[in-house]
Length: 160
Image (cartoon, rainbow, N blue to C red; front, side):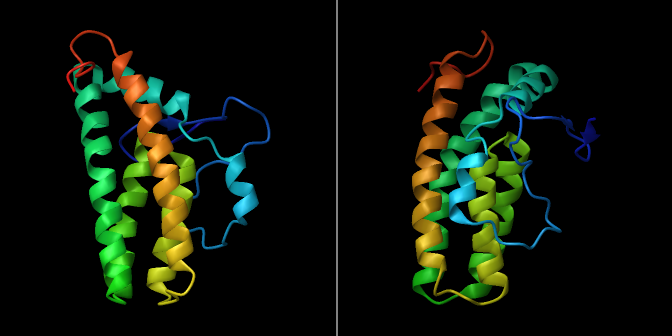
């Protein structure tokens, strides 16, 4: 059964049985770190739908995400270093939405946990979460770069 993500694309079953769907903003239960491996690094179904919907703009969207993720994580590190829980919350909220929309559920979950840490001003666990998010972001960005290189003509593939 597929449900529609507001204004963008449908969300359906993941490629492998038993995988957990990306969390919605209303979910507040913290996922154990070992369960993060159950989430896809990149959801090929979402990528395929975005490619189909956006066509030539697909490469631009992915490249913008690839360029923006390290900046957002650096800003989160600065907010954390300054003890700015509200800043961490706001930055994480924005990145979480981007990750979910682009089909990066594992990174979205880690960033959701950072968002919760910021919202609840529990920054003691945020440093570990941020380190995990940075490592996951590196893997996600590497995977998206491969997707960009394989993008059809008209996308920004190979223009790095």
